[in-house]
Image (cartoon, rainbow, N blue to C red):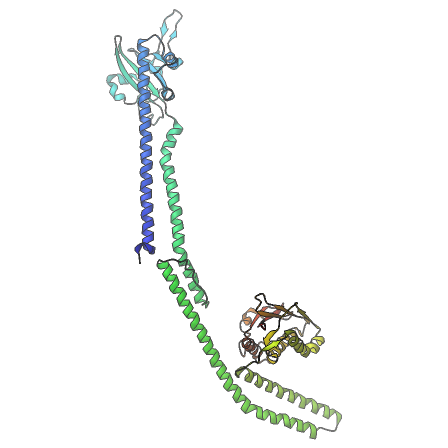
Length: 497
């Protein structure tokens, strides 16, 4: 198998891609930051140079700095430099401010007409002086020396000495920095990394979900198999990696287990049928002959030895009738054994299912009227004939109707029978619904098993024989029930072509 088609290969490939992408984006962000810093440094340098030039012109000219800056067509300061330069201050050899862009720093005139200059030390709102060590012995005269307290200030000051005929003068340029721009410049790499980490996290989440989803499916499927559901299958998603192979192997395993379970059930059913067959034959051989003798003897007793007294005759008749009923019940149970155990063969012919149902209803009509049970039959139009054996089908519906009436004999109710074509257009659907006691959920899955009965006198073969007859007709029988609300049996029989 190609290495990159495996789970490990794909995972390594994706992790390598994320690593390269992270390094590449980080390098690109660092490059952008470096370029922005270079541009900022160049702009500051140009502003400083322009500020020193303007200050130098102020030393030799008659105009003030502000007049030079405001002069139309001046080429000293461009708009960018004007935005960056907070002030340009000219300081003479006596540490007096002779000129500035700030009118508050300009000399004032006394009453006698002399100019009064502000001392440099009087300026307390100046930003920290950068690279002040280069000024040597003159540094103590600057009140804005850089200290640990003001080194983190946003604005900054730069001073340049100029030797003149009147001594050493200074031009000090105050630069201002945009705080929001500085904050954004500092945050931009973090924003980029945050975006990259978010994308990486999302990709990792998707990868983890994609790679662990088959494991979750396998875990859920294994749990359902442990609970006995062998029909479960894991979605394969056409994967060619280890997960796809594991899913296919798991599905193959459950398919084989399901086949083995079906074969085991068939074998158990065959063994059970064989046991029942042998038991039925033994019962028929060993019990029916004595039963026939008992039945004949009872008839003989009733005809020859009936008492003449009225009271004794009635008691004698009741006792012999009850004995004959019990003999008939035992004989019926034997017949049930034999009917279930013998191989059945049906004579399938086109049959009107409505006629078979009406024949079976005649048997229970008297009992229904006695127990105040209403019976309703609804047949849809154009119901086709079915392929069936009339005798076998009558046995099926007899059992269904009798069971329904027995579930309602204490409280009354309604028996509804509905006949309609099935949606697949291959079957005729017969629904038999009652409003009786219903069947509990734990018993619902067992009612078609032989010898399972909730009745004290039941043999447990009635529904099992029904299931066998329906299978013989290539049909389907289903049951729905709610305890205390009623039961609905649905029989689907193939329609006649």
